Length: 594
Image (cartoon, rainbow, N blue to C red; front, side, top):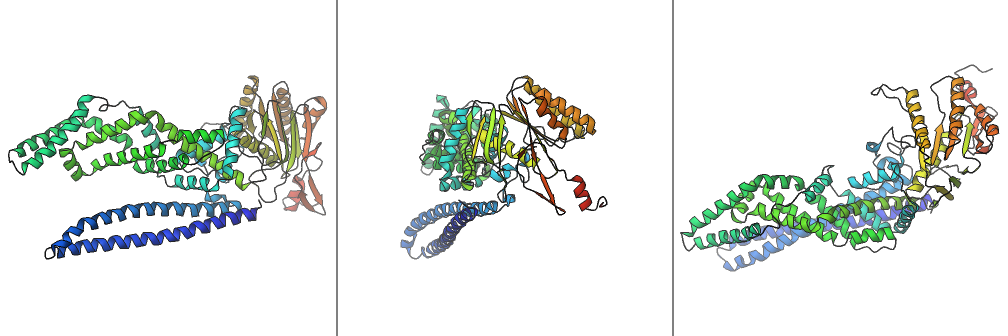
């Protein structure tokens, strides 16, 4: 699918949702006007009812109609918000296809300069892979997507199940976008999920005890009965008062525990309600792939159960209204009734709540990768095997849409270490990042930017962009040495690694840098690793002659013709023959022309 065809697809979907949005907006306005009309008619009938008694009998019907319209208005407004999000989603996809990644969150909060590769490969932050590929909107979904990028799947079977699920969702654009829009509607706070987890782990203090069950049933019944009786027998007023005071005393005895209970789930109605809608969507959608079928099974009865929890939480939140609190706790032991029902829900569903919420975040992640696959139909899914090697045909960087130059890659067997030389701006660093980012995609089960890609379950380590730290009193050079030491420490544990190094030991003189680089390469030789080392030091190319069983030279060449500098960004065998620093300095007037 071409870029223009993709853009047309999203533009058409945007227009369809915009038309539906216009229709639902008109419907909301109509319902609002009907509500106002019924309210005015009700007031009029009350006024005229004193002289035309028959009108008073119509008032209950008007009140019922009013509340039906209120409910329909709420449903229509929710649909309107959902459609607004769908319009926004398709507008954003069109912008992303054209290269504007700023419409998405950058994921800067997940940046970690000390991670083995994420900082070097621009996985987080402005212009990052996270910003380009993430479509998760719940906090849990974003965190899980970030984890996908920094922690690869651990087995071939897991990767294959992930690939199968992503491939199935790729064609289900409606499902994916409804999940994405639903996630946008969840007004989450970072503490919400944690507090819900803490709540389900707390022991019940009401539910399961028969004495409380009978008190909650009998005392409110006696209180209401006493109040009704008081209209006929004045003595019942005293009984009603005693029962009301008993209810407040009973609540006062448990108030600390009720308040602590409420603090965990207070204000969670909207969050739970939105999760319930997403779970209901997952529950009613049939799938074929094993991973999605498992998520579908986990979501059974989840939508209605989480919605019921949302309603119970909303009922308990009503205690925050002081006037209502005074009234219902005097008659019905309201707070205790709510706690009892919530504890009953918890006893039945406590072990399922976290898997239900996790099913939503997992679906978001799969949907993100499926959208990534849909937007890049030429990408392929990697083949994972046990051989310590990496091969690819037509490999490119997944975030370069226009003018992406592709290269073939083969590293392993008799070329486990590749020395890559070339002029400035010739493409060495982009090539290394292309390999690294595609390996990250492959090991998370996502499609890669290549015609064919095969690799093993291998750990990725990079040394491309070391940073100094004033806080830790650490220089750039010392930070780089620490990175190299961590790589060697892992190799000594016989971990299979793919090591990507770009112009190492920049913080020392050229002679020291060369001797240190040669020594480092020799240290890599005995270990189970693949390594690509980009450098300007042509002398490193001598290692191919010294260790022909493992080392190979490749290069990116610059072309200087008729005073013009150009690059083809194609990987070639051998050492680079042309450098461009002096040429560029002359061209820019930094040093004089000869």
